[in-house]
Length: 66
Image 1: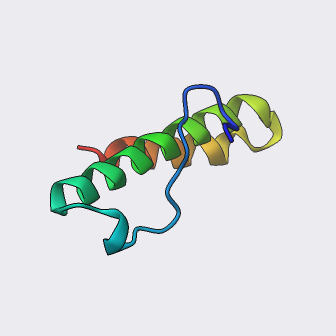
Image 2: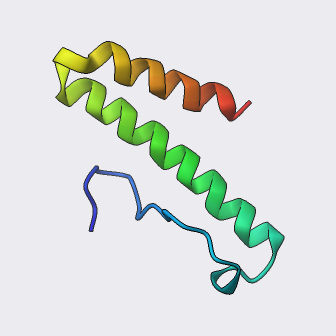
C-alpha cells in the first residue's frame, strides 16, 4: 500500500532472515530514512496546523543523512 506518492513500503522491522547481508540491511535502513523524510515533508503540506512539527522532523531526517 502506498500512502504518499513516491514513498515505497517502509520496513518497520528489520529481520536478519530478510537481509542477505550487511549491505542489504544498510540499504533498507537508508531507504527508510529517505521515506521518513518524504512522509514528514508530505504531512507538513497536508496538515498546515502541524506544519512546524513536520518540517522540523523532516529537517532532522535530512540532517541525519549527512
